[in-house]
Image 1: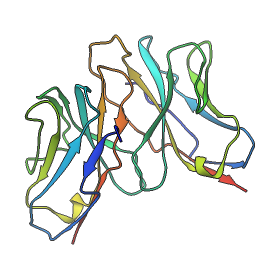
Image 2 (image 1 turned 90 degrees about the horizontal axis):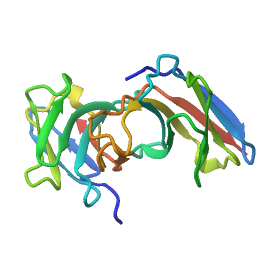
Image 3 (image 1 turned 60 degrees about the vertical axis):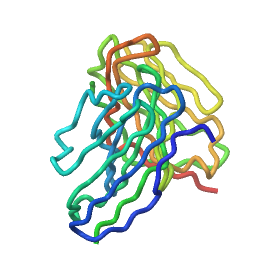
Image 4 (image 1 turned 90 degrees about the vertical axis):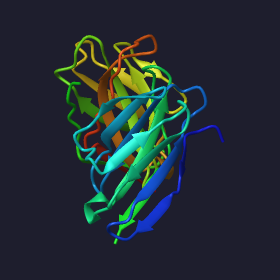
Length: 112
Length: 115
C-alpha cells in the first residue's frame, strides 16, 4: 500500500497523559499536513511541513501540541497533558508541491 | 482562499446521476476548484479538481460555469458506496505553483444514495 499511513488508528488516553501519533506520507511527497476533525465538522488545518521545515501553524495548535518531521519523511504529532477537548480525529495528508493532497485514514483520539 | 456554499444534504437513487452543486462567487483567477469526499470514519478522498475547463476522470465529472462562480460535481451512476460527505474547496495553486495553499474544508454536502 503506497498511500498515507497513520498509526495508531485509535487511541484512548486518560486526561493529562501525553500522546504521540505518527504519519508516513506517500514516498517523495515533500509536503505534509496535519488536520483535526471533530464530530459533524469538516477537517481543520493544524500545521504544514515542506520537507523538514514547519512553515505554518494554525492558531488551533496550542502550546501543548508539537509536530516534527525530522528527516523530511515521516512526521509525528504530540499532544501533551491531553484534555477532553482534544478528542477528535487527527488526519495527515501529503502532496507533491501544490498538487492534490492525499489523506490517511486518521487517528481517532478519545480522552477520558 | 475563497469560501464555498453547498447544500447540507442531498438524496440520490442508486444507478442515477448525482449532481452536487457548489457556489464560489468570490473565486480568484488563480484558484482551483477541488472536490473531496469522506466516507464515514475514513480520511477524505481526493476526487477531482479544475481551473476553468470541465474535467472528467474515472470517478466523476466536474462542470465549472463560464464565469467560474459555481460548479457541479457529477457522479454519473451513483452506487451505495458513494454515500459520503462531499466537500467543495477553492484553493490557489496547481502542479507548477511553488506557493503554499492549504485546503479549507466547510461542512460539505451529505449525499445519501438509496437502493
